[in-house]
View 1 (cartoon, helix red, strand yellow):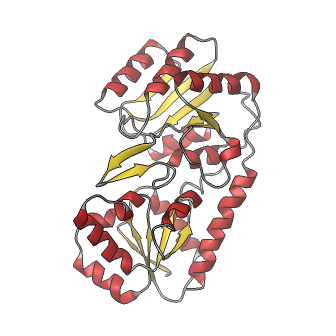
View 2 (cartoon, one colour; view 1 turned 45 degrees about the horizontal axis):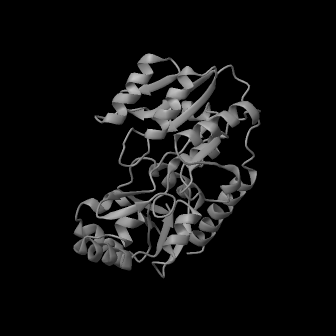
View 3 (cartoon, helix red, strand yellow; view 1 turned 90 degrees about the vertical axis):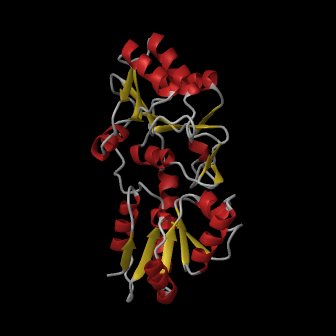
Length: 307
């Protein structure tokens, strides 16, 4: 066995499974995910220190390197001192992290094993536009999404706007819920979306909108999406072969820049969506992006296999 897995949960179980299938070393490697840091565990820390064979998967650099809470800074730096390799989801996050650490930083994207759907183009009767993620006004911009939904409802476009995440107890959810009652063109989820249904909707999407805010405050530090924290929406667009719309401020990884549509405000978002619906029925060609992802994956595998 090449990996000893510690407190992995959520999507990162898939990351570990992928690495376990690819990496073969003589001695076990302790693989750590961020949730294990939430509770003090002296026995685990002792194993990390004495094994000298541990890697950690970071998806929130602000928590580890840009934390405003002094005791957390010291605590996280102590743990990172004993870590051998740091793994992050994207090349853009690695670019940010190498400014902050002398340790070797590897890249392993998440969501990369969901098969790409072979869409020739948007030939379906109804075009599916998807906004992934639970409805949180702190982390995502729903003002522009609501503006788009209002436009689509009164337009002649045969579309379905899917808010692919559970509605919350906030004003954004209330307004989106009202729009879904007004029109079948807006689809929402009151409860948690199962992984199976989530993947099914993503793989049938034609347009995907990443609506992460530029910066949010979480766990003692500022998160900058696309830089210190990655948004999964980018990877989901690659997996599904969907057109991707992102805010003007969002950095995108793996050479994806020339394939995205950038929007600034509700009116601009509406114009970009209309352009795709009317003028760009071809499936995006993410071949170069996938090649870049595979390059980074292979680089990580080679480094860990030689360890």
